Image (cartoon, rainbow, N blue to C red; front, side, top):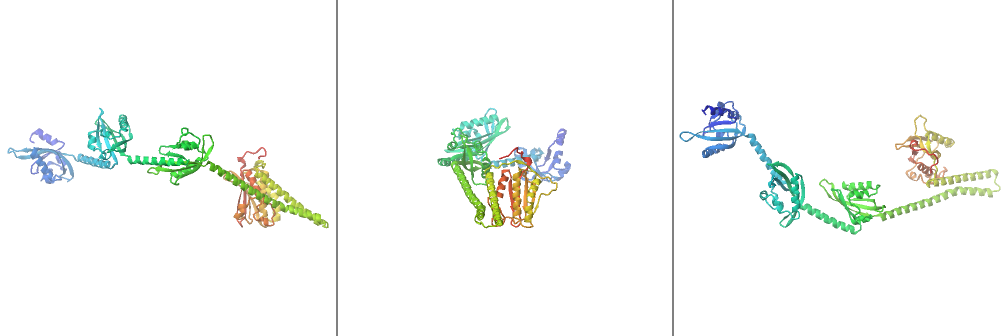
Length: 637
Protein backbone atom coordinates (compact mmCIF):
# COMPACT_ATOMS: atom_id res chain seq x y z
CA UNK A 1 0.00 0.00 0.00
CA UNK A 2 2.92 2.31 -0.67
CA UNK A 3 1.52 3.46 -3.99
CA UNK A 4 -0.05 6.90 -3.54
CA UNK A 5 -3.11 6.07 -5.65
CA UNK A 6 -3.71 2.82 -3.87
CA UNK A 7 -3.16 4.46 -0.50
CA UNK A 8 -5.79 7.06 -1.34
CA UNK A 9 -8.26 4.34 -2.35
CA UNK A 10 -7.49 2.46 0.85
CA UNK A 11 -8.17 5.50 3.00
CA UNK A 12 -11.43 6.57 1.39
CA UNK A 13 -12.96 3.14 0.67
CA UNK A 14 -16.55 3.20 2.16
CA UNK A 15 -16.18 -0.34 3.49
CA UNK A 16 -13.57 -1.69 5.85
CA UNK A 17 -10.19 -2.70 4.41
CA UNK A 18 -7.31 -4.37 6.23
CA UNK A 19 -3.99 -6.16 6.11
CA UNK A 20 -3.54 -8.87 8.72
CA UNK A 21 -0.97 -11.52 9.63
CA UNK A 22 -1.71 -15.25 9.45
CA UNK A 23 -1.24 -15.29 13.22
CA UNK A 24 -4.21 -12.95 13.68
CA UNK A 25 -2.65 -9.54 14.11
CA UNK A 26 -3.62 -6.28 12.35
CA UNK A 27 -1.01 -4.59 10.17
CA UNK A 28 -3.22 -1.92 8.59
CA UNK A 29 -6.89 -0.80 8.91
CA UNK A 30 -8.64 1.90 6.93
CA UNK A 31 -10.94 4.48 8.61
CA UNK A 32 -14.10 2.56 7.60
CA UNK A 33 -12.86 -0.56 9.45
CA UNK A 34 -11.88 1.59 12.44
CA UNK A 35 -15.40 3.01 12.60
CA UNK A 36 -16.94 -0.46 12.15
CA UNK A 37 -15.14 -1.59 15.32
CA UNK A 38 -16.15 1.53 17.29
CA UNK A 39 -12.60 2.89 17.59
CA UNK A 40 -11.38 6.46 17.17
CA UNK A 41 -8.27 5.79 15.07
CA UNK A 42 -6.17 3.04 13.56
CA UNK A 43 -3.67 2.99 16.44
CA UNK A 44 -6.51 2.49 18.90
CA UNK A 45 -7.79 -0.54 16.92
CA UNK A 46 -4.34 -2.07 16.44
CA UNK A 47 -3.76 -1.83 20.16
CA UNK A 48 -6.96 -3.82 20.85
CA UNK A 49 -6.32 -6.61 18.35
CA UNK A 50 -4.19 -9.49 19.57
CA UNK A 51 -5.75 -12.60 17.99
CA UNK A 52 -8.55 -12.06 15.44
CA UNK A 53 -9.59 -15.72 15.49
CA UNK A 54 -10.50 -15.74 19.21
CA UNK A 55 -11.38 -12.10 19.80
CA UNK A 56 -13.38 -11.04 16.74
CA UNK A 57 -15.33 -14.07 15.53
CA UNK A 58 -18.25 -15.17 17.69
CA UNK A 59 -17.48 -18.71 16.51
CA UNK A 60 -13.65 -19.12 16.75
CA UNK A 61 -13.75 -21.95 14.18
CA UNK A 62 -14.62 -19.39 11.52
CA UNK A 63 -10.97 -18.13 11.48
CA UNK A 64 -9.69 -21.62 10.67
CA UNK A 65 -12.33 -21.98 7.91
CA UNK A 66 -11.22 -18.58 6.57
CA UNK A 67 -7.57 -19.64 6.48
CA UNK A 68 -8.42 -23.03 4.97
CA UNK A 69 -10.25 -21.41 2.05
CA UNK A 70 -7.29 -19.07 1.52
CA UNK A 71 -4.89 -22.00 1.55
CA UNK A 72 -6.96 -24.01 -0.93
CA UNK A 73 -8.08 -21.28 -3.29
CA UNK A 74 -5.82 -18.33 -2.59
CA UNK A 75 -8.86 -16.15 -1.93
CA UNK A 76 -12.09 -15.90 0.12
CA UNK A 77 -15.27 -14.47 -1.40
CA UNK A 78 -18.59 -13.68 0.36
CA UNK A 79 -17.44 -15.06 3.71
CA UNK A 80 -20.29 -14.19 6.13
CA UNK A 81 -19.61 -14.36 9.86
CA UNK A 82 -20.98 -13.05 13.14
CA UNK A 83 -18.32 -10.91 14.86
CA UNK A 84 -17.91 -8.52 17.80
CA UNK A 85 -17.06 -4.86 17.54
CA UNK A 86 -13.68 -4.53 19.24
CA UNK A 87 -14.51 -1.39 21.15
CA UNK A 88 -18.07 -2.21 22.37
CA UNK A 89 -18.38 -5.99 22.07
CA UNK A 90 -21.64 -5.58 20.11
CA UNK A 91 -22.40 -8.59 17.90
CA UNK A 92 -22.78 -7.82 14.20
CA UNK A 93 -22.71 -9.66 10.89
CA UNK A 94 -20.02 -8.97 8.25
CA UNK A 95 -19.17 -10.10 4.74
CA UNK A 96 -15.45 -10.60 3.96
CA UNK A 97 -13.52 -10.81 0.73
CA UNK A 98 -9.75 -11.50 1.02
CA UNK A 99 -6.67 -12.95 -0.65
CA UNK A 100 -3.25 -14.12 0.55
CA UNK A 101 -0.06 -12.21 -0.31
CA UNK A 102 3.12 -14.33 -0.39
CA UNK A 103 6.71 -13.22 0.15
CA UNK A 104 9.82 -13.92 -2.01
CA UNK A 105 10.15 -17.31 -0.29
CA UNK A 106 6.64 -18.30 -1.44
CA UNK A 107 5.21 -18.35 2.06
CA UNK A 108 2.14 -16.31 3.06
CA UNK A 109 3.29 -12.94 4.29
CA UNK A 110 -0.10 -11.39 5.09
CA UNK A 111 -3.76 -11.25 4.13
CA UNK A 112 -5.49 -8.35 2.44
CA UNK A 113 -9.25 -7.92 2.29
CA UNK A 114 -12.43 -5.93 2.80
CA UNK A 115 -15.12 -6.11 5.52
CA UNK A 116 -18.73 -4.94 4.96
CA UNK A 117 -21.31 -4.87 7.74
CA UNK A 118 -24.47 -6.78 6.65
CA UNK A 119 -26.27 -7.04 9.97
CA UNK A 120 -29.59 -5.65 8.67
CA UNK A 121 -29.37 -7.81 5.55
CA UNK A 122 -28.90 -10.94 7.67
CA UNK A 123 -31.65 -9.95 10.10
CA UNK A 124 -34.03 -9.34 7.21
CA UNK A 125 -33.10 -12.67 5.70
CA UNK A 126 -33.70 -14.38 9.03
CA UNK A 127 -37.06 -12.67 9.37
CA UNK A 128 -37.99 -13.73 5.86
CA UNK A 129 -36.99 -17.33 6.58
CA UNK A 130 -38.94 -17.28 9.84
CA UNK A 131 -41.96 -15.80 8.07
CA UNK A 132 -41.78 -18.38 5.32
CA UNK A 133 -41.46 -21.11 7.95
CA UNK A 134 -44.52 -19.85 9.82
CA UNK A 135 -46.45 -19.54 6.56
CA UNK A 136 -45.46 -23.08 5.58
CA UNK A 137 -46.59 -24.36 8.99
CA UNK A 138 -49.93 -22.57 8.69
CA UNK A 139 -50.44 -23.84 5.15
CA UNK A 140 -49.83 -27.38 6.35
CA UNK A 141 -52.57 -26.88 8.95
CA UNK A 142 -55.10 -25.77 6.34
CA UNK A 143 -57.49 -28.69 5.65
CA UNK A 144 -57.08 -28.26 1.92
CA UNK A 145 -54.60 -27.81 -0.91
CA UNK A 146 -53.11 -24.31 -1.25
CA UNK A 147 -51.48 -23.34 -4.52
CA UNK A 148 -50.00 -20.43 -6.46
CA UNK A 149 -50.00 -20.57 -10.26
CA UNK A 150 -48.35 -18.28 -12.82
CA UNK A 151 -49.69 -17.86 -16.36
CA UNK A 152 -47.12 -16.54 -18.79
CA UNK A 153 -48.03 -14.19 -21.67
CA UNK A 154 -47.82 -17.10 -24.11
CA UNK A 155 -50.48 -18.99 -22.11
CA UNK A 156 -48.18 -21.60 -20.59
CA UNK A 157 -48.61 -22.28 -16.89
CA UNK A 158 -46.23 -22.83 -14.00
CA UNK A 159 -47.20 -23.93 -10.50
CA UNK A 160 -44.99 -21.85 -8.23
CA UNK A 161 -46.25 -23.50 -5.04
CA UNK A 162 -48.57 -26.30 -4.00
CA UNK A 163 -48.99 -27.64 -0.47
CA UNK A 164 -48.23 -31.23 0.48
CA UNK A 165 -51.90 -32.14 1.04
CA UNK A 166 -52.26 -32.36 -2.74
CA UNK A 167 -51.28 -36.01 -2.39
CA UNK A 168 -54.18 -36.73 0.00
CA UNK A 169 -56.79 -35.08 -2.20
CA UNK A 170 -55.55 -35.78 -5.74
CA UNK A 171 -53.11 -38.68 -5.26
CA UNK A 172 -50.13 -36.83 -6.80
CA UNK A 173 -47.01 -35.30 -5.26
CA UNK A 174 -46.24 -31.56 -5.15
CA UNK A 175 -43.17 -32.18 -7.29
CA UNK A 176 -45.28 -33.87 -9.98
CA UNK A 177 -47.73 -30.95 -10.05
CA UNK A 178 -44.93 -28.39 -10.32
CA UNK A 179 -43.44 -30.41 -13.18
CA UNK A 180 -46.78 -30.75 -15.02
CA UNK A 181 -49.27 -27.95 -14.13
CA UNK A 182 -52.23 -29.60 -15.92
CA UNK A 183 -51.83 -32.86 -14.04
CA UNK A 184 -54.85 -32.19 -11.79
CA UNK A 185 -57.16 -32.12 -14.78
CA UNK A 186 -56.40 -35.80 -15.35
CA UNK A 187 -58.06 -36.90 -12.12
CA UNK A 188 -61.11 -34.69 -12.67
CA UNK A 189 -64.36 -36.57 -13.35
CA UNK A 190 -64.91 -36.74 -17.14
CA UNK A 191 -68.37 -35.18 -16.82
CA UNK A 192 -66.97 -32.21 -14.89
CA UNK A 193 -63.69 -31.71 -16.80
CA UNK A 194 -65.00 -29.38 -19.57
CA UNK A 195 -66.92 -27.25 -17.09
CA UNK A 196 -63.90 -26.93 -14.77
CA UNK A 197 -61.47 -26.02 -17.56
CA UNK A 198 -63.83 -23.43 -19.06
CA UNK A 199 -64.53 -21.81 -15.67
CA UNK A 200 -60.79 -21.56 -14.87
CA UNK A 201 -59.95 -20.08 -18.29
CA UNK A 202 -62.68 -17.45 -17.98
CA UNK A 203 -61.64 -16.51 -14.42
CA UNK A 204 -57.97 -16.11 -15.47
CA UNK A 205 -58.89 -14.00 -18.50
CA UNK A 206 -61.16 -11.71 -16.46
CA UNK A 207 -58.94 -11.69 -13.32
CA UNK A 208 -62.15 -12.61 -11.49
CA UNK A 209 -62.65 -14.69 -8.34
CA UNK A 210 -63.86 -18.23 -8.85
CA UNK A 211 -65.75 -20.73 -6.69
CA UNK A 212 -66.60 -24.06 -8.26
CA UNK A 213 -67.53 -27.56 -7.09
CA UNK A 214 -66.47 -30.61 -9.11
CA UNK A 215 -65.66 -34.28 -8.74
CA UNK A 216 -62.37 -36.15 -8.87
CA UNK A 217 -61.90 -39.88 -9.36
CA UNK A 218 -59.17 -41.45 -7.22
CA UNK A 219 -58.68 -45.22 -6.97
CA UNK A 220 -62.16 -45.75 -8.35
CA UNK A 221 -63.73 -43.57 -5.66
CA UNK A 222 -65.48 -40.30 -6.44
CA UNK A 223 -64.69 -37.29 -4.26
CA UNK A 224 -66.24 -33.83 -4.29
CA UNK A 225 -63.88 -30.83 -4.32
CA UNK A 226 -64.58 -27.12 -3.95
CA UNK A 227 -62.15 -24.76 -5.69
CA UNK A 228 -61.87 -21.16 -4.53
CA UNK A 229 -59.31 -18.92 -6.28
CA UNK A 230 -58.60 -15.26 -6.95
CA UNK A 231 -56.15 -13.10 -8.86
CA UNK A 232 -52.84 -12.16 -7.19
CA UNK A 233 -50.26 -9.46 -7.99
CA UNK A 234 -48.31 -10.24 -11.22
CA UNK A 235 -44.92 -11.85 -10.94
CA UNK A 236 -42.12 -11.69 -13.54
CA UNK A 237 -44.59 -10.54 -16.19
CA UNK A 238 -46.90 -13.47 -15.52
CA UNK A 239 -50.50 -13.40 -14.33
CA UNK A 240 -50.68 -14.92 -10.84
CA UNK A 241 -53.56 -16.72 -9.13
CA UNK A 242 -53.78 -18.17 -5.67
CA UNK A 243 -56.39 -20.63 -4.51
CA UNK A 244 -57.35 -23.54 -2.35
CA UNK A 245 -59.03 -26.91 -2.93
CA UNK A 246 -61.28 -28.30 -0.19
CA UNK A 247 -62.54 -31.86 0.15
CA UNK A 248 -66.34 -31.48 0.55
CA UNK A 249 -67.22 -35.15 0.04
CA UNK A 250 -68.59 -35.56 3.58
CA UNK A 251 -70.72 -32.42 3.20
CA UNK A 252 -72.12 -33.64 -0.13
CA UNK A 253 -72.91 -37.05 1.31
CA UNK A 254 -74.67 -35.43 4.29
CA UNK A 255 -76.69 -33.22 1.96
CA UNK A 256 -77.63 -36.22 -0.15
CA UNK A 257 -78.64 -38.21 2.94
CA UNK A 258 -80.64 -35.26 4.23
CA UNK A 259 -82.28 -34.86 0.83
CA UNK A 260 -83.08 -38.56 0.64
CA UNK A 261 -84.48 -38.54 4.17
CA UNK A 262 -86.46 -35.40 3.36
CA UNK A 263 -87.91 -37.04 0.28
CA UNK A 264 -88.80 -40.13 2.29
CA UNK A 265 -90.35 -37.99 5.03
CA UNK A 266 -92.20 -35.89 2.44
CA UNK A 267 -93.55 -38.99 0.69
CA UNK A 268 -94.75 -40.41 3.99
CA UNK A 269 -96.54 -37.19 4.91
CA UNK A 270 -98.04 -36.72 1.47
CA UNK A 271 -99.49 -40.21 1.72
CA UNK A 272 -101.45 -38.94 4.73
CA UNK A 273 -102.91 -36.11 2.63
CA UNK A 274 -100.96 -33.26 4.23
CA UNK A 275 -99.37 -30.46 2.22
CA UNK A 276 -95.58 -30.52 2.56
CA UNK A 277 -93.40 -27.41 2.27
CA UNK A 278 -89.62 -27.03 2.21
CA UNK A 279 -88.05 -23.65 2.93
CA UNK A 280 -84.41 -22.83 2.10
CA UNK A 281 -83.89 -19.82 4.36
CA UNK A 282 -80.30 -19.31 3.21
CA UNK A 283 -81.43 -18.61 -0.37
CA UNK A 284 -84.97 -17.49 0.54
CA UNK A 285 -86.52 -20.08 -1.75
CA UNK A 286 -89.03 -22.82 -1.13
CA UNK A 287 -91.30 -25.47 -2.56
CA UNK A 288 -94.78 -26.77 -1.83
CA UNK A 289 -95.82 -30.28 -2.76
CA UNK A 290 -98.36 -30.70 -5.58
CA UNK A 291 -100.82 -32.06 -3.00
CA UNK A 292 -100.35 -28.86 -1.04
CA UNK A 293 -101.12 -26.68 -4.04
CA UNK A 294 -104.16 -28.83 -4.83
CA UNK A 295 -105.33 -28.25 -1.25
CA UNK A 296 -105.90 -24.59 -2.21
CA UNK A 297 -107.32 -25.36 -5.67
CA UNK A 298 -104.15 -24.70 -7.70
CA UNK A 299 -102.36 -26.80 -10.28
CA UNK A 300 -98.69 -27.52 -9.70
CA UNK A 301 -97.61 -24.90 -12.25
CA UNK A 302 -99.98 -22.18 -10.96
CA UNK A 303 -98.59 -21.48 -7.51
CA UNK A 304 -95.03 -20.60 -6.51
CA UNK A 305 -93.94 -22.31 -3.34
CA UNK A 306 -91.55 -19.62 -2.10
CA UNK A 307 -92.20 -18.24 1.41
CA UNK A 308 -93.15 -14.74 0.25
CA UNK A 309 -95.86 -16.06 -2.09
CA UNK A 310 -97.31 -18.29 0.63
CA UNK A 311 -97.23 -15.50 3.20
CA UNK A 312 -99.07 -13.27 0.72
CA UNK A 313 -101.91 -15.82 0.66
CA UNK A 314 -102.21 -15.80 4.46
CA UNK A 315 -105.10 -13.87 5.98
CA UNK A 316 -103.81 -10.41 7.08
CA UNK A 317 -105.32 -10.84 10.55
CA UNK A 318 -103.35 -14.08 11.03
CA UNK A 319 -99.94 -12.93 9.71
CA UNK A 320 -98.60 -11.25 12.92
CA UNK A 321 -99.41 -14.28 15.07
CA UNK A 322 -97.93 -16.65 12.47
CA UNK A 323 -94.68 -14.68 12.31
CA UNK A 324 -94.41 -14.55 16.10
CA UNK A 325 -94.74 -18.34 16.27
CA UNK A 326 -92.16 -18.73 13.51
CA UNK A 327 -89.69 -16.36 15.22
CA UNK A 328 -90.09 -18.22 18.52
CA UNK A 329 -88.92 -21.42 16.83
CA UNK A 330 -86.12 -19.69 14.90
CA UNK A 331 -84.78 -18.17 18.13
CA UNK A 332 -84.97 -21.48 20.02
CA UNK A 333 -87.79 -20.43 22.35
CA UNK A 334 -90.09 -23.12 20.94
CA UNK A 335 -89.02 -26.66 19.98
CA UNK A 336 -91.28 -26.66 16.89
CA UNK A 337 -93.25 -24.13 14.87
CA UNK A 338 -97.03 -24.56 15.21
CA UNK A 339 -99.72 -22.11 14.11
CA UNK A 340 -103.29 -22.13 12.85
CA UNK A 341 -104.11 -19.60 10.14
CA UNK A 342 -106.20 -19.04 7.05
CA UNK A 343 -104.98 -19.40 3.44
CA UNK A 344 -106.81 -17.83 0.50
CA UNK A 345 -107.79 -20.48 -2.05
CA UNK A 346 -107.87 -20.00 -5.79
CA UNK A 347 -111.65 -19.45 -5.69
CA UNK A 348 -111.24 -16.65 -3.13
CA UNK A 349 -112.50 -18.44 -0.04
CA UNK A 350 -110.43 -18.77 3.11
CA UNK A 351 -109.34 -22.19 4.34
CA UNK A 352 -108.06 -22.92 7.83
CA UNK A 353 -104.81 -24.91 8.02
CA UNK A 354 -102.64 -26.18 10.84
CA UNK A 355 -99.06 -25.26 9.92
CA UNK A 356 -96.25 -27.18 11.59
CA UNK A 357 -92.52 -27.12 10.91
CA UNK A 358 -89.05 -27.68 12.30
CA UNK A 359 -85.61 -26.29 11.41
CA UNK A 360 -83.52 -29.10 9.94
CA UNK A 361 -80.21 -27.27 9.64
CA UNK A 362 -78.55 -24.24 11.29
CA UNK A 363 -75.21 -22.50 10.78
CA UNK A 364 -72.41 -22.20 13.33
CA UNK A 365 -74.18 -19.22 14.94
CA UNK A 366 -77.49 -21.03 15.28
CA UNK A 367 -79.21 -19.20 12.43
CA UNK A 368 -81.75 -21.42 10.63
CA UNK A 369 -80.79 -22.50 7.11
CA UNK A 370 -83.49 -25.02 6.18
CA UNK A 371 -86.99 -25.68 7.49
CA UNK A 372 -89.47 -28.39 6.55
CA UNK A 373 -93.12 -28.49 7.52
CA UNK A 374 -96.70 -29.43 6.69
CA UNK A 375 -100.11 -27.86 6.26
CA UNK A 376 -103.05 -29.88 7.56
CA UNK A 377 -106.56 -29.00 6.40
CA UNK A 378 -108.55 -28.14 9.55
CA UNK A 379 -111.27 -26.15 7.83
CA UNK A 380 -114.00 -28.68 8.64
CA UNK A 381 -112.79 -28.84 12.22
CA UNK A 382 -112.89 -25.04 12.48
CA UNK A 383 -116.41 -24.93 11.05
CA UNK A 384 -117.51 -27.62 13.49
CA UNK A 385 -115.88 -25.68 16.28
CA UNK A 386 -117.71 -22.51 15.22
CA UNK A 387 -120.99 -24.44 15.14
CA UNK A 388 -120.27 -25.76 18.63
CA UNK A 389 -119.62 -22.24 19.86
CA UNK A 390 -122.85 -21.03 18.28
CA UNK A 391 -124.68 -23.97 19.82
CA UNK A 392 -123.13 -23.24 23.22
CA UNK A 393 -124.05 -19.55 22.90
CA UNK A 394 -127.57 -20.46 21.89
CA UNK A 395 -127.80 -22.90 24.77
CA UNK A 396 -126.45 -20.29 27.18
CA UNK A 397 -128.90 -17.73 25.82
CA UNK A 398 -131.73 -20.23 26.16
CA UNK A 399 -130.71 -20.94 29.73
CA UNK A 400 -130.46 -17.22 30.44
CA UNK A 401 -133.90 -16.70 28.89
CA UNK A 402 -135.31 -19.52 30.99
CA UNK A 403 -133.75 -18.07 34.13
CA UNK A 404 -134.98 -14.59 33.19
CA UNK A 405 -138.51 -15.84 32.66
CA UNK A 406 -138.34 -17.66 35.97
CA UNK A 407 -137.09 -14.54 37.74
CA UNK A 408 -139.60 -12.33 35.95
CA UNK A 409 -142.48 -14.64 36.85
CA UNK A 410 -141.31 -14.64 40.45
CA UNK A 411 -140.94 -10.88 40.57
CA UNK A 412 -144.33 -10.32 38.88
CA UNK A 413 -146.09 -12.79 41.15
CA UNK A 414 -145.24 -10.84 44.31
CA UNK A 415 -147.05 -7.57 43.43
CA UNK A 416 -149.85 -9.48 41.64
CA UNK A 417 -150.47 -11.57 44.74
CA UNK A 418 -150.65 -8.40 46.78
CA UNK A 419 -153.10 -6.80 44.32
CA UNK A 420 -155.31 -9.89 44.24
CA UNK A 421 -155.16 -10.36 47.97
CA UNK A 422 -156.23 -6.84 48.87
CA UNK A 423 -158.81 -6.80 46.08
CA UNK A 424 -160.35 -9.96 47.59
CA UNK A 425 -160.38 -8.29 51.00
CA UNK A 426 -162.28 -5.37 49.49
CA UNK A 427 -164.70 -7.82 47.94
CA UNK A 428 -165.21 -10.10 50.93
CA UNK A 429 -164.90 -7.74 53.86
CA UNK A 430 -168.21 -5.91 53.53
CA UNK A 431 -168.01 -4.80 57.14
CA UNK A 432 -164.62 -3.14 56.70
CA UNK A 433 -164.43 0.42 57.92
CA UNK A 434 -163.75 3.21 55.43
CA UNK A 435 -160.27 3.54 56.92
CA UNK A 436 -159.53 -0.18 56.31
CA UNK A 437 -160.89 0.00 52.79
CA UNK A 438 -158.72 3.04 52.14
CA UNK A 439 -155.70 1.11 53.41
CA UNK A 440 -156.52 -1.86 51.16
CA UNK A 441 -156.83 0.45 48.14
CA UNK A 442 -153.47 2.03 49.00
CA UNK A 443 -151.79 -1.39 49.02
CA UNK A 444 -153.38 -2.24 45.67
CA UNK A 445 -152.21 1.05 44.15
CA UNK A 446 -148.72 0.63 45.62
CA UNK A 447 -148.38 -2.92 44.27
CA UNK A 448 -149.79 -1.86 40.90
CA UNK A 449 -147.27 0.98 40.64
CA UNK A 450 -144.47 -1.43 41.54
CA UNK A 451 -145.75 -3.88 38.94
CA UNK A 452 -145.92 -1.17 36.29
CA UNK A 453 -142.38 -0.01 37.05
CA UNK A 454 -141.15 -3.58 36.91
CA UNK A 455 -142.78 -4.15 33.51
CA UNK A 456 -141.37 -0.85 32.19
CA UNK A 457 -137.85 -1.74 33.28
CA UNK A 458 -138.12 -5.23 31.79
CA UNK A 459 -139.30 -3.78 28.49
CA UNK A 460 -136.60 -1.13 28.51
CA UNK A 461 -133.87 -3.68 29.32
CA UNK A 462 -135.17 -5.89 26.53
CA UNK A 463 -135.10 -2.99 24.07
CA UNK A 464 -131.54 -2.06 25.02
CA UNK A 465 -130.31 -5.66 24.71
CA UNK A 466 -132.01 -5.89 21.31
CA UNK A 467 -130.04 -2.81 20.20
CA UNK A 468 -133.07 -0.55 19.82
CA UNK A 469 -132.53 2.30 22.33
CA UNK A 470 -133.14 5.73 20.85
CA UNK A 471 -130.35 8.09 21.88
CA UNK A 472 -129.86 11.82 21.43
CA UNK A 473 -126.08 12.29 21.74
CA UNK A 474 -125.07 15.74 22.94
CA UNK A 475 -122.52 17.48 25.13
CA UNK A 476 -123.47 17.22 28.81
CA UNK A 477 -122.11 19.51 31.50
CA UNK A 478 -121.03 17.32 34.41
CA UNK A 479 -121.84 19.94 37.11
CA UNK A 480 -125.32 20.56 35.73
CA UNK A 481 -125.97 16.81 35.53
CA UNK A 482 -124.83 16.29 39.13
CA UNK A 483 -126.93 19.22 40.37
CA UNK A 484 -130.07 17.87 38.66
CA UNK A 485 -129.60 14.41 40.16
CA UNK A 486 -128.90 15.71 43.68
CA UNK A 487 -132.04 17.85 43.53
CA UNK A 488 -134.09 14.72 42.86
CA UNK A 489 -132.81 13.01 46.04
CA UNK A 490 -132.82 15.86 48.58
CA UNK A 491 -135.88 14.57 50.45
CA UNK A 492 -134.87 10.89 50.15
CA UNK A 493 -131.38 11.60 51.52
CA UNK A 494 -132.81 13.59 54.49
CA UNK A 495 -135.22 10.75 55.32
CA UNK A 496 -132.36 8.20 55.20
CA UNK A 497 -129.98 10.40 57.23
CA UNK A 498 -127.35 10.37 54.46
CA UNK A 499 -125.40 13.43 53.33
CA UNK A 500 -125.13 13.84 49.54
CA UNK A 501 -122.29 16.02 48.26
CA UNK A 502 -122.26 17.34 44.70
CA UNK A 503 -119.33 18.39 42.51
CA UNK A 504 -117.08 21.01 44.05
CA UNK A 505 -117.66 24.45 42.52
CA UNK A 506 -113.93 25.37 42.53
CA UNK A 507 -113.80 26.89 39.03
CA UNK A 508 -111.85 23.94 37.62
CA UNK A 509 -112.69 23.11 34.02
CA UNK A 510 -114.36 19.72 33.68
CA UNK A 511 -114.68 17.83 30.39
CA UNK A 512 -118.16 17.55 28.92
CA UNK A 513 -119.59 14.06 28.52
CA UNK A 514 -120.95 12.91 25.16
CA UNK A 515 -124.19 11.04 25.74
CA UNK A 516 -127.97 11.07 25.88
CA UNK A 517 -128.85 13.46 28.70
CA UNK A 518 -132.01 11.65 29.77
CA UNK A 519 -130.19 8.31 29.87
CA UNK A 520 -127.22 9.80 31.75
CA UNK A 521 -129.61 11.22 34.36
CA UNK A 522 -131.24 7.79 34.59
CA UNK A 523 -127.87 6.05 35.14
CA UNK A 524 -126.47 8.52 37.68
CA UNK A 525 -129.84 8.61 39.49
CA UNK A 526 -129.79 4.84 39.82
CA UNK A 527 -126.25 4.96 41.22
CA UNK A 528 -127.11 7.71 43.73
CA UNK A 529 -130.34 5.93 44.73
CA UNK A 530 -128.44 2.72 45.45
CA UNK A 531 -125.74 4.59 47.37
CA UNK A 532 -128.41 6.15 49.61
CA UNK A 533 -130.58 3.03 49.99
CA UNK A 534 -127.74 0.68 50.92
CA UNK A 535 -125.93 3.16 53.18
CA UNK A 536 -126.40 3.77 56.91
CA UNK A 537 -127.62 6.73 58.93
CA UNK A 538 -124.84 9.28 59.22
CA UNK A 539 -123.23 8.06 56.02
CA UNK A 540 -122.30 10.11 52.99
CA UNK A 541 -122.52 10.00 49.22
CA UNK A 542 -120.35 12.22 47.02
CA UNK A 543 -120.10 12.85 43.31
CA UNK A 544 -116.90 13.55 41.37
CA UNK A 545 -115.91 14.10 37.74
CA UNK A 546 -112.69 13.89 35.75
CA UNK A 547 -110.98 12.91 32.51
CA UNK A 548 -109.32 9.61 31.57
CA UNK A 549 -106.04 9.13 29.73
CA UNK A 550 -107.82 7.47 26.80
CA UNK A 551 -109.90 10.52 25.86
CA UNK A 552 -112.91 9.65 28.03
CA UNK A 553 -114.73 11.64 30.69
CA UNK A 554 -116.13 10.25 33.92
CA UNK A 555 -118.65 11.01 36.63
CA UNK A 556 -118.48 8.84 39.72
CA UNK A 557 -120.69 8.15 42.76
CA UNK A 558 -118.88 7.10 45.93
CA UNK A 559 -120.29 6.11 49.32
CA UNK A 560 -119.07 4.88 52.68
CA UNK A 561 -121.65 2.14 52.98
CA UNK A 562 -121.06 -1.55 53.78
CA UNK A 563 -119.25 -2.30 50.51
CA UNK A 564 -119.42 -5.48 48.43
CA UNK A 565 -117.64 -8.83 48.47
CA UNK A 566 -115.93 -10.31 45.45
CA UNK A 567 -118.78 -12.77 44.99
CA UNK A 568 -121.33 -9.95 45.06
CA UNK A 569 -119.29 -7.93 42.53
CA UNK A 570 -119.25 -10.90 40.15
CA UNK A 571 -123.09 -11.03 40.10
CA UNK A 572 -123.74 -7.31 40.41
CA UNK A 573 -124.86 -6.48 36.86
CA UNK A 574 -127.04 -9.54 36.33
CA UNK A 575 -130.82 -8.85 35.99
CA UNK A 576 -132.77 -9.18 39.29
CA UNK A 577 -129.50 -9.52 41.21
CA UNK A 578 -129.69 -7.44 44.42
CA UNK A 579 -126.52 -8.65 46.13
CA UNK A 580 -128.41 -10.11 49.09
CA UNK A 581 -130.65 -7.07 49.59
CA UNK A 582 -133.70 -9.10 48.54
CA UNK A 583 -133.72 -10.48 52.07
CA UNK A 584 -133.65 -7.01 53.64
CA UNK A 585 -136.07 -4.13 54.07
CA UNK A 586 -134.82 -2.15 51.01
CA UNK A 587 -137.23 -2.38 48.08
CA UNK A 588 -136.11 -2.77 44.47
CA UNK A 589 -136.31 -4.86 41.32
CA UNK A 590 -132.63 -5.65 40.75
CA UNK A 591 -132.81 -4.32 37.17
CA UNK A 592 -131.35 -0.84 37.64
CA UNK A 593 -127.65 -1.70 37.40
CA UNK A 594 -128.15 -4.17 34.57
CA UNK A 595 -130.09 -1.55 32.62
CA UNK A 596 -127.54 1.18 33.48
CA UNK A 597 -124.63 -0.84 32.16
CA UNK A 598 -126.49 -1.65 28.94
CA UNK A 599 -127.32 2.03 28.42
CA UNK A 600 -123.72 3.10 29.10
CA UNK A 601 -122.39 0.63 26.54
CA UNK A 602 -125.03 1.77 24.00
CA UNK A 603 -123.60 5.31 24.35
CA UNK A 604 -120.03 4.05 23.80
CA UNK A 605 -119.12 4.04 27.48
CA UNK A 606 -118.88 1.69 30.43
CA UNK A 607 -119.50 1.44 34.17
CA UNK A 608 -116.70 0.49 36.54
CA UNK A 609 -117.08 -0.43 40.19
CA UNK A 610 -114.54 -0.64 43.00
CA UNK A 611 -115.62 -1.87 46.40
CA UNK A 612 -114.37 -3.72 49.45
CA UNK A 613 -116.41 -4.96 52.43
CA UNK A 614 -116.59 -2.30 55.13
CA UNK A 615 -114.97 0.38 52.97
CA UNK A 616 -117.84 1.53 50.77
CA UNK A 617 -118.15 1.52 46.99
CA UNK A 618 -117.40 3.74 44.02
CA UNK A 619 -119.33 3.44 40.74
CA UNK A 620 -117.93 5.36 37.73
CA UNK A 621 -119.68 6.12 34.46
CA UNK A 622 -117.15 6.54 31.64
CA UNK A 623 -118.27 8.22 28.40
CA UNK A 624 -116.45 9.78 25.43
CA UNK A 625 -115.37 13.40 25.79
CA UNK A 626 -117.90 15.61 23.97
CA UNK A 627 -115.23 17.22 21.73
CA UNK A 628 -114.40 13.83 20.26
CA UNK A 629 -117.88 13.13 18.82
CA UNK A 630 -120.06 14.86 16.28
CA UNK A 631 -123.33 15.98 17.88
CA UNK A 632 -126.23 14.00 16.49
CA UNK A 633 -128.90 15.81 14.55
CA UNK A 634 -131.57 13.44 15.75
CA UNK A 635 -132.23 10.27 17.69
CA UNK A 636 -129.56 7.63 17.12
CA UNK A 637 -130.47 3.94 17.31
